Image 1 (tube, rainbow, N blue to C red):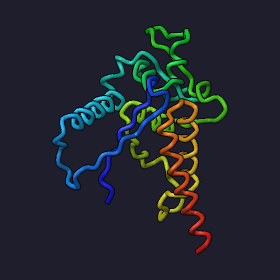
Image 2: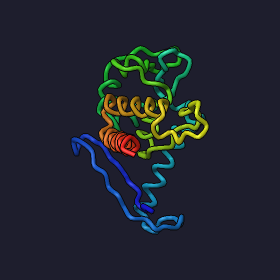
Image 3: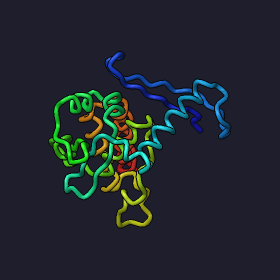
Length: 195
């Protein structure tokens, strides 16, 4: 069993991204190293900001889905610090709604490809907490009850959308992580065809 946890950082200073993997005990004890514990606490706090509706009041922007049925309240300072793309987008003057909240359409942000709401949530979740979170259970629903969702059409579609959105939003470390997933998928498919 792999007992590593990865922390990623993308910022202007390094002009790219870096990833650090650390070995952790196989038990679920809290870390004794205060620096690692502090990073975990920070990640958990930022994840709570993203997940909890209690923090929607503090959001200063919203990203709306292509069909305007769903919107995600976001914090421009967090996304700008994590993504050069969002820093550039948020630096430009934008229209605000009556409450003073800036609105951005996902279709305009993603430009060439139709990115789904669940893919957007996956990328934003990573930007907030630095962790690749599990996909929602209903996202990869296919007609085969015995499907492992490794290579079924809904899983491949979501994988492609997340990879595209990560690339478009300039989240290099997430692009690298999803490229590995795509490589594993291809190798898995090739091995199934050989057998």
